[in-house]
Image (spheres, rainbow, N blue to C red):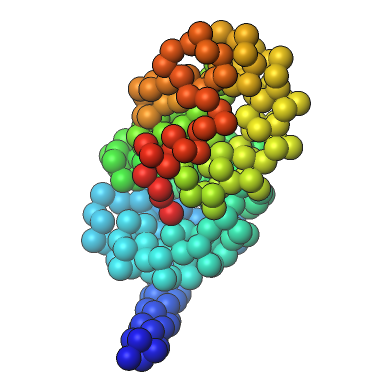
Length: 261
C-alpha cells in the first residue's frame, strides 16, 4: 500500500512539474504581462512577478503557480532546479554563485538578490523575502534593506552579531542551512572562515580577540539576538550576564530555536 501511495505521489509531482514548466514557458514569451516589477535570472529566465496580488498566476508568492511552487523548475523555492537551493547556478540562495537573479522594480534593476556577500549592489535573500511577504508596497517603491543584520532582525530570526555589528550566522539547528553556524561547510560554521566563531585564528573566534566569544577577558563578546532583542551574550567570560557558553550554543539553540528547513 505504501509503495502504491509513494508511486502515486511521484506521478502527481511529475505532473505538476510538467504543468509548471509549460506555464512558465508560455508566460516568458509575453513580456508585457510582467508588470514592470519582477525577478529575472542571469540567463534571462523570468522568475515571477513582484505583486501585491498573491493569487496572480505569475506571482512569486503564488505557491500553486510556476514561479512560487516548490515543484516548479522556474521557482526560487525549488531547491533542485538551477534557480533555487544552495547549489543552483542562478539561485539567490547559492552563497558562491556569481550569477544570482536581478530584481527589477518599475522596469529598473535595483540590485541582485543573493546570499553571496561579494556580489555588487547586493540585496540579501532574507531582506528580499521579508519585504516580499510583509512589505510588498514598500518593495514596489524600491525600499529594501541592504544589511544582513537588519534583514535577519526584521525576519525575527535568532542570530549572532559581533560587537562591531558584523553578522556571524543564525542559530537554526538545521546543519544544512547556508547561514547557520552549525553548518560546517557554510560561511559561518566553517572553522577556516574569517566570519566563523569556530575559527580560532579569526577576530571573531580567537582566544585573544576582543570580539571573540572564546576570550575570557573580553567585555565586547558577540550577542545572541532574536529579532531586534538581545537575549544573551555568547562568551566564556563568567563575569558577563546573561550569557551562553559558546561550547553549549547548539544545546541552547535546540531548546530555544525552532528548526527551519
